[in-house]
Image (cartoon, rainbow, N blue to C red; front, side):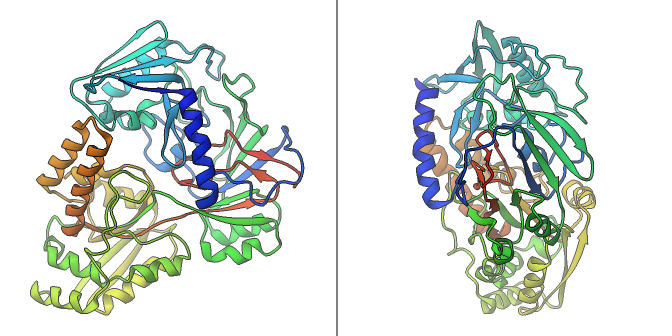
Length: 502
């Protein structure tokens, strides 16, 4: 049996913290605080994309996960910024040797924000309802769970077949524990078990959390966190320099010198699972030809993109460095405009015009480089910059596009390449079979190796182009400590955040 305890997880966290401090600054106090943390402090964090509503059950989008998971809502297990699975509402767990039985020990003394005690029945109800409600996000992630039962404080999940992704899935929406039959208005309010309580939402402006004074674990170290939604980078930088925000996230790394000019901020570049994905609609037309897709890939100067962004690194396949199954696939699509021209000629393509559909909150840097690079090989690229709701409707839902660019922040999301109905329009039975084998593997190394094989096939098929693996760009104000700087677009766990006078 595999067993994971809170003590073991704490040891791993300590070791991980040392490593990440040196390499990525996962939760580094930078600049260093020069006075004691103020437990009554209010910390203001600039974010970019405000959620349309707060319903974590069934509203898509990373904007909700970023602030609500860990801070307000919790699962039996959680994940660290560097993707380690650790205890949360469960103090420990065991996995049977055949991979079919997962047993969790529920923490004692946990209460919801409304004061009601968390019961094993809440856990069973939450997971069963998630599994059986197709409208709830990630319900399919529990498809292999046959039964969920409680015996005292022990929660047992029995599977129909092994699922190497189950524990990871339980760290996300699929595993969030809600109060049974809660009457809270999830659209505008929240009732979780986390270290922060949602107190205010001024739509179009900010969301405010207060410390949960009755939290079952170690209490948050600031009294209040305000998420200030500022869409444009320059407005955000101006707010920082005016002393109106304590932390900036999601801004252009080229603004580093400006942000750091007065000495009040230090810019940290952490790793992330952000994937700048150029999707090809390969259902029909010229992009159905692999040679055309490969030509586009080889026409693009990925190093120039990373240099222009002043952050991140190149990525030539669907799995980023932080995820299992990663492999350097730069050999699959090296920058070679002449080879791209030859591929287009072989495909009999001349005077090709394509449209790039891109949400309008992205900067013009990526489209400008793509237009130039593709023009060099004889492809005319027209750019259609649209609001996000239009992108969701036309690209994500209707698959009505030629090329599309979106930054996919989700970790371990290879499943999208094994789903022919996803908006990527990629369909390869061999990839789907390898992914299914990876899920069924009970050895993590075997599961990762199968993902690695599948990812190479996707890249060799030119299933898409991965323009870059983004960095988490975070400006940390003087007096701020404990702010994550790894994978912050996906999760922003603020349990260790402190603020002093600096």
